[in-house]
Image (cartoon, rainbow, N blue to C red; front, side):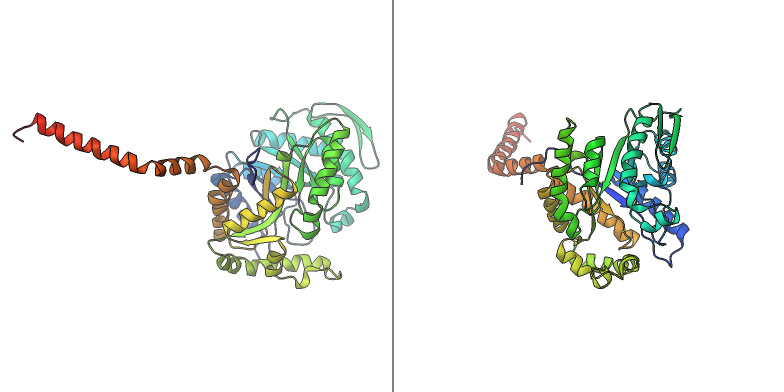
Amino acid sequence: MAKRKNKLRLGLFIAPFHALNEDPTLALERDLELTQYADELGLAEVWFGEHHSGGYEIIMSPELMIAAAAQRTKRIMLGTGVITLPYHNPLMVANRIAQLDHLTRGRVIFGAGPGLLTADAHMLGLDARESREKLDQGLSVVKRLLAGEMVTEKTSWYDLHDAHCHLLPNQEAIEIAVASAFTPSGGTLAAKHDTAMLCLAATSPDGYDALSGNWKIAQEAAGKFGRTMDPARVRCATDMHIAETREEAMDQARKGFAITQRYFVNQTAHLAASPMDVTLEQMVESGEAIVGTPDDAIAQIRRLEEKIPDFGTLLLFDKNWAGTGHKKRSLELLMRYVLPEINGTNASRQKSFDWQGEHAQEYLETMQQATQRAFEKHAKENPQG
């Protein structure tokens, strides 16, 4: 495998997914605890979602979670994963992001998307079929506002008059990312607005198959604007839980997987392709998820690199498949053994180890000679000793 041009980073994508019989207060506390552990372990970033229906994904405001997480963490970047931009006035979004950037001391990433749950749009009286166009409009405005511009613009869903952020962000330029799944629209928007890409279906069957095609479309679109797409700004999201053995990993994840599947089945049971009968073993066999060992995780990353060489960050969906203790151990194994292998972190150590071994005999002989000389010197200086 060719050497990476940039180091792969690891992050968490916390939608989240919490069972209906779980105390919601403690569930959210668990999400913050996991974020704090990720910070201590050295993960690069954590993303929080926005959902308003369905009962499982109980973060309604990623901004509030980021504000809370900022008080418990020191260095990890905190992303909105994602703000459903068509649900909000762009000026209000820009103002909240700017304020958060100060509260986090410059650790905010602004992720935006069209919205995944049609039920959310229904409650707001919105036509979800218009969401991608609105994302395009709103993203342009938020970018301009965060850059300090004054905006006067009217569309079907906002009317701005001399709008501006009277408090600009702490960072010189906040990183912005656009959600991308199966269609090329996310990559096209990322190219148009010069943002990062959040590939949120990177290892699902349809998403994986489309990954390289969408990346090519994004590159071609960027070329039309005189820009290039940097793969280091691409995040690929997947399901992954690892342990010392595959058997342990499967045992740890099986019950939580079944609980989470109920959520997806509830939305798709009427479809012929519903995940109603999909087992954890089938997801692993298809390559959609990794439940196994560090070697299995490495192999999955290599698969993704075939689609987008040198992609920047592996995002792990946090679906509560495993208990918190096992989840933390999985993250530790990924940081301790998987990322070093992908990034070649220990190449110089291995080289030094091999070099020392190759010269072991001569160095041993030199040591023995030095020891003999020491005895001889002592004997000469102490003839009676």
